[in-house]
Every structure is written in C-alpha cells, then in structure tokens.
Amino acid sequence: MSIMGTSVSGMGADTNWLSAISQNVANANTTGYKEAQTEFEALVDQSGANSYSGAGVTSSVQALNAMQGSIVGGQSSVTDLAVQGAGYFVVSDAAGDLFLTRSGGFVPDSSGNLVNAAGYYLMGYNIQNGPANITANSLNGTEKVNINQAGETATPSTSGTFTANLPSTATAVTTAADLPSANPSAANVQYTDKTSIVAYDNLGGSQTIDLYYTKTGVNASGQDTWEVTAYNHADASASGGFPYSSGPLATETLNFNSTTGALASVTSGGATSANLSLSIPVPNGQSMTLDLSAMSQLAAGYSVSQANVNGNAASSVTGVSIAADGTLSFQYSNGTTVAGYQIPLANVASPNNMTSINGDAFQANGLSGAVKVGTAGSGGFGSIESSSLEGSTVDLATELTQMIQAQSAYEANSKVFQTGANILDVLNNLKS
Image 1 (cartoon, rainbow, N blue to C red):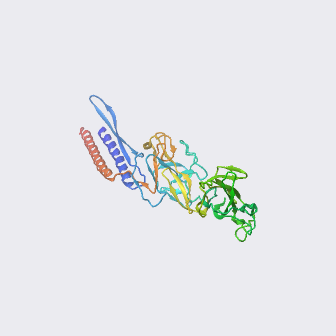
Image 2: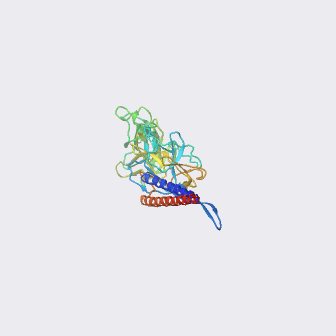
Image 3: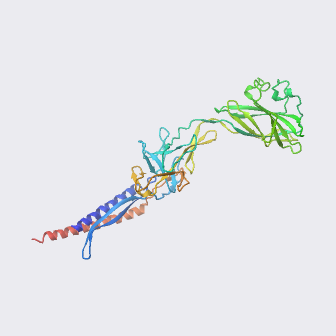
C-alpha cells in the first residue's frame, strides 16, 4: 500500500507539473506573462535503520513574477507600455479593486480611460493642477488615466524678448506734446520707428501691442535717450494709429551708451534702473515683462532681430506622449506640451509570492509583503518604455523538453503503481 500511495502522489505531482507546462505553453504569446515553475518536495512517513516508508512527493507551482521579459519596441500606439527593470503598473478592475500587472497593452475605452485586454484600468496621479504627492506605502490619490479629459488650453503671455537696433543718426523729437506718450493727433505725433507684437490674454485671445520708439535727445549723463511707448492696437483710431482711445499701456526711457551703443539703463516714473525691460499689462491678461537688454543704438537703420512672446492661443489636444519616468503629457495643436498624469510603478519585497489573478494580474499578500509605490527610474524602480510591450518569459523549447520529462515521470510512477498492485495481488492469493 505504501508503494501504491507513493506512486499516486508522484502521478499527482507530475500532473501539476504538466498543468503548469500547459499553462506556460498556452501563454507563450501573452503580453507580460510570467512563467510558472513547478517545485517538488519529498515526503517521508518513517525512516529507520532497518525500514523506510516513503510518503511520496508534493508539488507546488510558483510564478516567476520577477523575471524580466524581452521588450518589443516599435508598437503602433504610444499607450503600449513596458517596464524595463523592477516594478509593476497599478491597475484597477471595474469594481475599483487595485492590482499589479506587467501587461501594458493599454488602449482608450469609449470614455478615454486606458484599459488593457483583460479589462484592467491603468491608474495614475492627475498632475494637471500640480505635482503628484506619491506616498511610498499608499496608492491613495490614484485615478484612472484618461486621455480625453484634457480640453482646449490657453496660456496668457507673461514674458517676451524684443531686440532691435535703433538708428543713432535719427533726429530727436524735443516737443513733449508731440511724443507718442502724449497720445497726440495723427497730424502732430512724431516718432522714429514702430513695431507691433502679439501677446495672449487669459482666454487665449490675441492682443496686438503697438510699440513706438522715439529718439528724445541726450540726458545729463551724456547718454542718448529714446522713449518706448506701448499701446493697445484695439484702441487705435480708424487710421490704425493716433490718437488712441486710451492712453499708453506703458512708457519708459531707454538710456544708451553713446560710445558703445549698448542699452545702459531704463528710466520709468523718474527712477532709473539697470533692469532692462518694459512691463506691459496685456489687455484682459497678465503683466508681461518684455526683455530689452539686447537693444542697441548704432549708425544703421532700424531693424528687428528678435520679437518673441510666450503664451498661446486656445488649442486642442492632438496626441499624448509618455516619458521614461511615467509622465503622460498632452500635445496641443499649437506645439505646446502639458503634463497630465504621473504613471507610478509599484513593487513588493517578494514578487514571486504574490497571488496570481485572472488577466495576468497580481495581488499582494502576507508572503509577498506590502505594496510600495514610486516614480519610474528612481528608488529601485525600472523605467517605462512607450510604444513597447513586454513579451512572455516562456521559452517553448524548454517547456516542450520538460513536457517529455513530465510525461516520462508520470509513466514511470504508473509502472510503480502497477508493480504495487501486482504485489498486493500476490499477498491476497497467499491464503489460497
């Protein structure tokens, strides 16, 4: 009976082995699948100097969850994600329960939520209104990553750069009532040169700012002086210029070194400063600091070499990009990029002991240790690769070889069982 019982345990263990092999073979092409490995342990009923009673063998199947699969790049979707190194994506099912997975083939559902083939939703931190507060031992604050939430965006102008040469040979305007800052009639106004720039208000509307540069003479320090005056073009008269319906947005005096032609200082409201900029309140927008530090006054004509202003008009989302650290950014039609989500990675102390869940997902337990969360590329976590998928860790050649071994072992145990049965028949026939 001991022989038969031992061989039956052997056949049971080999059945588990074959079951694990069949699971591996079936998932040889499953994204992020981790190979299952069968381990055997001997059982002994009694062992003495003159006797031995074996109790057979037991087997356990363990997924090699920490094994790195090959990364297959060049996927058509940027939301196909793979982890290179340690860590798992945090996902949730329809009920909101959280799990870990390496199956990163995410696509947007009808609502724009990223979901993989098993129905698990990718979780992340919404950073559209500020950085994420990632707590190592908590998944609080995560939400479904949605790529349809970002609507149109507009950024008001707050800074800019204007660089031009002002002709040193220009005739100075000495009558204050005729300067652009006095907002005289079109017949009386005198100025040297004019340029218009476009800035953006709080709603993304374009606001044209007219800049007038007028040579005014020489100051007490022997510096050549120029007046710069900014007007809202929307306030211009029917002729497109003076007089404006409202006064200037800003006026300053530029003081140039008469020897080098470089801008030396700026005078505003009677105070002279080395801060070489013009502060312009954009209509319906923010205060814009226009950098004038590279302005020059040389014996050449008026020429603008740089006129850049930040901000943008209202723009719609054209796509998304995902960086190696898990930052998902929205790309807008005007060329700007805005961070939307921080996709974290999670891990446990003993990944191989996690509980396997349908859909190539895992759940932490007492043997695996608690879940720890962090940013990809830091704190021991691997990096996230976009437009890539992690292949299965199954090697078919190895599995087929082990299948032959498992089948042979099963057959051998069945022979042992048959031998035990024959011996039992002999014992039963001793009385006859």
